[in-house]
Image (cartoon, rainbow, N blue to C red; front, side, top):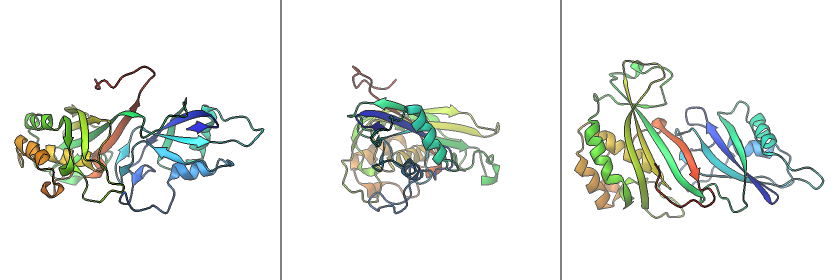
Length: 285
């Protein structure tokens, strides 16, 4: 968030099943008629110039955000004292009451700060539950917060072998959304890190949970869900690790296996990281 020459940034948390303001409920090129909750909340601050949020990472509907980031320019009427970061966060949360989103914190940043383009790394986590034979076996507090697969347990060693092909700078055309994005974005992306590790459940001690973590500076629309789906297909022995390399090399979204994309509700935007003064673009970890 920025304010009359002195800037602030705010981080947001989406606490529901992915229907909060960061969710993209329509394709990227289709305008949304109803302003999202955080934009409506800013509109209630009685500012002389309407505040417009810039979101770091826009996700498709159903995806959760543990900690997304945004910035907005704030102008105060002459004679009024500037808003402090604490007051601004409290005011936004007040107007967000009843909405599945909350402001975690607000920070003062330079005027050159941009929530999207200044991002250093974005971390996504995809949660998977195995051992289910029916949806009813999934604890109620896990529903819509993970992907329950019904093909037995996963071959994790094969998934890790396949994940190695994804790391690095590649043309991810095969892993981009079939929905046309405007403006057209380059399919070249750098994936700095992929990790597949055991995870805990909120309640269940009978099912096995896994987390797939992806770290990169930026991602194509639905790229993470498509990568997660392919890795799960490898874990289920529907694909072999070498097929992931072949999918990258063919650079054709029509080559992506049908019925493989991971559902939105298992995906979480975990964090967005920014540079500090003097830092260089070193890899995460």
